[in-house]
Image 1 (tube, one colour):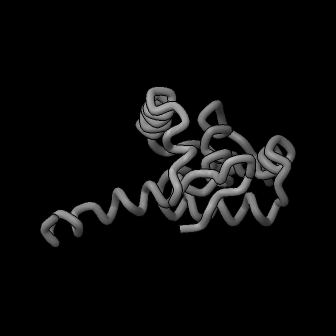
Image 2: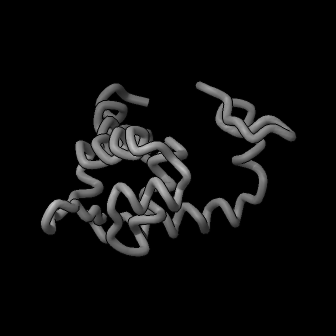
Length: 119
């Protein structure tokens, strides 16, 4: 592959890395169903407030979510409805490939384990 082609993939690589974290993906999936406050996300996802806030900051930096202020509360929402299409497409690819991605020796989950391998 030519160097120019690799350079052109940098934004896509960053996007998929932002989606590759289980916590950020869970937050995005939840926000895809409607606005949410940090307190909503901590309760629904069973995560610490600091964890949710850290991942929301990352998603905001990536331009995937933003918030609106109402009184003393911040409501987070997706900034790009196209992200829903991307998530749906990913689910279709996963359904079509079956367990192949989950069994990938580099990025998949070892048999019988709930943790992911680090690349």
